[in-house]
Image (cartoon, rainbow, N blue to C red; front, side, top):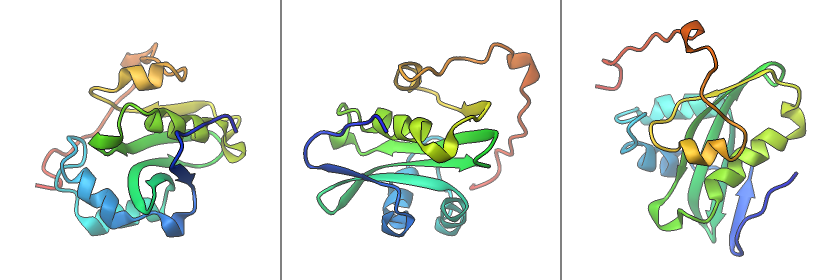
Length: 144
């Protein structure tokens, strides 16, 4: 796999090492998951392929991929703690997913972002050519 991290950082896909409480602590303030209950995030992470980046013993970044490992993946909950941004950690996690042997040959990768288009565009992501084909059902009352 083609990825590199700055010295002192470690990427893991070992689900047993990924700290759901640390992830929940960050995601409580993220615009896309504000007020998401801990148990909901725990269930989501248990059913997903997750990566985390550690600096020493501290989990400083995470990404979650919802996938069938055959045709489709939805990238979600990508975050990097503020003091560790600008070091390519998010880009590395996404590249790791994209290069992972279990995820090859998928036709559709999907994500939603309000402000990180540049991170993903460098890895080949683009706006949908056919937004008219995409529908969403969003319940704004969830997590209120």
